[in-house]
Length: 611
Image (cartoon, rainbow, N blue to C red; front, top):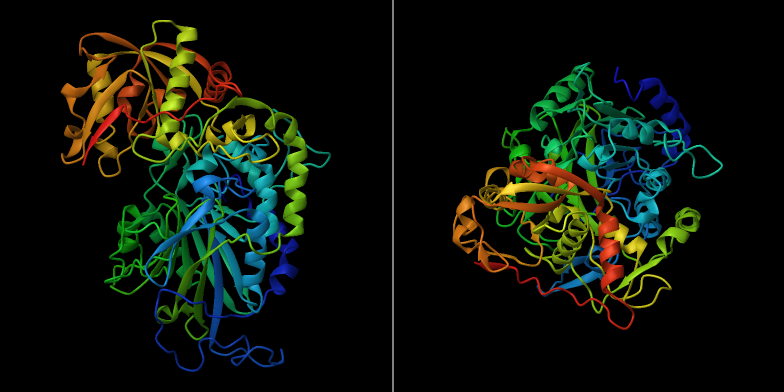
């Protein structure tokens, strides 16, 4: 039995929610990307085999539609995200596109509750990264507010994502089972209750026991209908999480793990199976309603999930995915060549996916030809859910004295988008400045793009006024509490680290480090592999980098540990650990800006890109 999520505790939690589950309503087909073939009888019939409203005394029909609502990568975004993080791109009937404001759990709750109406067989599942890299409202309280919100949203089950391990296995166990934080204690007069839903971690093993850290699967049951859920995170989690966060854990292959537990569920007589996978793909369009099955099934999507979907056992009927923050509803053939639905609902609560799974009571399996699915926007033109508004209000009151404090001023939006971003340059400059307070000989700073979680927007998010940067806004940008570390590297190592941006594990999906003022080079995307970083172009303050010289480099502690596929950055010497990266950013903004002299967005012209 998994050590940190006893089945008995889960049973008690599930029992508390039985009445709510029994009150949900019966199956309606959604508009979807997958055309359905007709089934014998009525696949869209209600529980009694006919239309809605039939007497409960009738026997269920053979086919029962089960509604699966899903979302992923919420990252603690309880309030509506700002800037580009709070919009989705939508293809219009005439082929043009427009941006639509989206997100916020007050609206997500309303949309999910409306979607469930008329669907007595309804399940809500998530694809991981519900917490971690969260805005201050949740992150300041170790994501207890987000778990409370997920309970209120009626989440039934979730896979773990890599960010569930940001604070380590013990903290994940606390989010699951409850209890006050071991260091910060209780934030209110009530003890934190933990998640009402099970976190699934089938491919995350305790290195000592060799058993799953949490439950590997969970089975939803209602009046003879059984649907099994297997949850996994990406096998490469140790490469993108701090070493301390995954200490004592091993992460196994996603496909092998899912196939193993699909067989186990089949042995238990559970033939309808959904995999919750915190790994994703890259659709050919950023529009949420893009048809990634055009011209053929799955033709419009690439990336890790395509390979996973093609190899996961045909016993699995649908894949709910995440991690890449992309939006897609695709059909990717399984190993038997049979169509199978693969979905992802972008990130930050901006979308949810509504999938209809038609359950065949005669076989206990899903009739794949009848699967329909579509992504829906969490628009902000619906009433706010009062319970979510109250939850946000409670935690906002606690966070306000810290979060509302002004720390700097900007003259315009400073975005995080692009190969080199204005915000990436600003953060690298801040870390270089902090490094020089520790050691005046610090030469440069490097920042990983994945550590920049949001843009800084000029428009006020509250009462602070336009152009004012608050501590809460800076926290949303850099929520990980990494330290700024100084290390010595040879010029050869520095060149190698830059080449690792586009080679090794980063060859297929490059991770371009953000660089401090004075470091310049050319990135030639017409070349392949490490050659895309043009060695002879690398300059520091106008001078070529000398392979034999020693350079003092500032990075965050995640990169200093070789994270994000940069092993060379884990080989530095003469380490010196400074303050956390958020403090470095705050110090820089405070020292270099004022209401009358705000910081201008950097030009993002340090890397010359050839396409």
